[in-house]
Each structure stands twice: as structure tokens, then as C-alpha cells.
Length: 456
Image 1 (tube, rainbow, N blue to C red):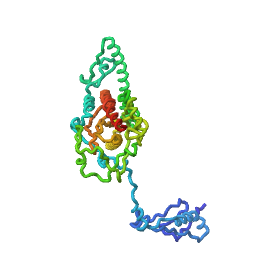
Image 2: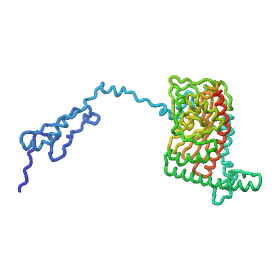
Image 3: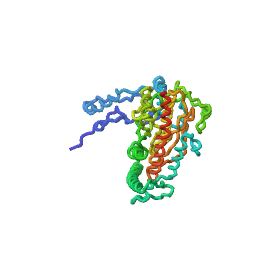
Image 4: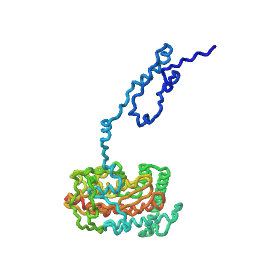
């Protein structure tokens, strides 16, 4: 059988536009010139498509599907050339404003607060600290140097293997009134010490696993940091609160000055020994045309009030517009003074952001304490408080000082322990124990006095 004759070629189509009805319809390929580049797509006219030939019925039948496709392309909407008037709105559009909380992410940004927060490196931190913090500092230095951090009961406990231990790391043996009492006390102490040692080893295992698995900040908090704080920092009157949900009361949010002061050093003349020259205690920064900043931190060490302190706090919170003794209305902190704040990060996190979070939070705490003092008739220097920063398993400490019109945060890479080694855990135990004792003693006496004056 002879092969079917080929369809005659239509002379109406040039070589650039040959339609094969057996193939999938596609956009015609035009030769690319400088006038037909991707940048000129909006300037190009709508492409025209040749009409199909109607010379014969066979041709019409074969071209029907393609004709529908080309007609649809030819009649589709197209963008007209953009003129100056059409481009103007996009050029004139103003960018969306950035919230202060997102805008202030560096320590230098805290200098724009109405009461600036300055981070200062100190080689001799003890000399720079006020007298009210030097006792706590001395206890923390002992923990930093691992002096007396290991319980004496661990020396002779079978199965306890402590490496690289120096004699100065052991605590002195406790003395009892008589031999019988001594035996009972030692046996009980041995059991509790060994049980605690086992719990610390479990935390170390979790810490190292969290590091190996690159866990998130929230996972570190739940698996490691929260366990450490509950184990080492809590007492009968000091508890740990997770405050990641706490918000700063609007009245206490630090305000941002519209302009950066020219000379911060001239704003205050404050002696860190506890006295202040030209310290205007009753002056509050103006909040006219200013914006507030809000940041959050992870944990707080909180003082559980006893009956006497509770009798002072309750009437104060009932009469206060903010109904809280802290800078937040978060319920667990409304009636429990919280002087120590902890911010955690992973090694992949931004340490600068952590500093800003602590800086904003302590600035808000200062605002709340000043509001207490104003109710008492005068604003005095606020007690120096420790701030804790945790990166993975490493714990460091800073001090926040009331410097009159500024807040100074003193830093010297003060390492108080880590959760990756057993010695680091006992360092942490000694450091957190010193902070707990400070909260129960010096801070409790100070905040009680402030609240009593506010109610007078």
C-alpha cells in the first residue's frame, strides 16, 4: 500500500511560526534581541498570532484545536507599559514601622533608654561593687575557684570516683556534740549526699546529650536548666519560677528616648561604695514622646514571703494600681519578690540578644522598685543584684548596679559552674547556695524595709 500523501504546506506561515497539529501547542519562539529581554516583558506589545487558513475543509479540520489555543493567547489580558504615574505609588510607599522590642537588639541600643543601661567590663569587680554586694561576691569567688565545693562525706563513699580533685576543694568535716550524735548525723548525711551525687550525675548526662543533639533553648530549659535550679537553688523560702510567659507591666516598661544623649558620663556622678553625689532620687525621666521596650527572660529566683513579709505585701498589692511587687503581673510573681533573673541561650544563639533581654528586664525591675520607693516619699539607691546568663551548660554571672540616672551591669566573664562535669556541678551548687543565702538574708531585709516605707 502506498504511503499517505503529505499535507501540503501552507504558504501563509513563515519559517518562524510552523504549526504541527500533532504536537502540544506552545508559545511561539521569537528571536531574542535587546528589545525582547526579561526586563522588557512589561514594555513588549501583546504578541499577534496568524489566523488559520480556510482554503480547504481538511485544513480547517486539522487546525481547529490550534486555532482555539492561539485565539485564547491572543485575547488574554496583558500588562500595559508602566508609566511614571503607575510607578509612583510603589516608590512613595512607606516601610512598615518596626516595633521597639524588635528594633532594640544590641547592648548599644539600651543607651537610648530614658534611664540608660550600660554594660561595663571590670578587671577588679570587687572594687567596683557597692558594699551591699561584696559579701555575696566573696562567696561566689570561692565557688569560682572551687574552694570547699565538695562534701566531705564523698571522700570515703564506695563507687564515687572524683578525678583531678585538689585538697582545697573539700569541705571541712562537720563536728557533732558527741560520738553517738556524730554517727547518726554522718550516716544520714552520707545517704543524702550520695543520693544527691547520683542526681547530679544524671543531670550531667542530660546536659551532655543536649549538647551532642544540639537541642533547642526550650529543650535545654526543660531537660537541664530547670532540673539544676530545682536541685541546687531552692530552699524553704526560695523557689524557682519559669517566667518565659511573664510580661512586663506597661507602667514599668523602660522608655526609649527619641535622641541619644551626647554625654552619658556627665549624667551621673555615682560612687560605687554606696554614696552618690548629685544623685537626684526624686527625679524620674520624662516619658513624653517616648516608646516602651518589652523583653522576656527564662527563670527567676523568687522569695517566698513568710507571715511577717506577707502581712506587708498583701495590703500593698491591694492598694497598688499595678497590684504587683515586681515588674510583671504574672501571677506567681505578683506577691513574691524576685531579685535574681536568669536568661538562657544555646551556643547557636545570640549572646548580644541575651544581654539585651537581661538589660531590659532589670531596667523594668528598677522601675517597679522606684515606684515602691516613691510611695514611701523618697527614692534611695536600689540594692545591687546578680544576673545569671547560661549558654548551653556554662553559667556566668553579672551584677546590676543602681548608678543614679543609669543602670550599670558589671561583667568580667565570671564563671560560676557548668553542667558538663561533676566539679562544674558542685561549683554551681556552691554559687547558687550563696545566692539563695543572700536572698534569704540581705535582700529580704532590704525589700521588707522598702515595702514598709511604701505603706507608711
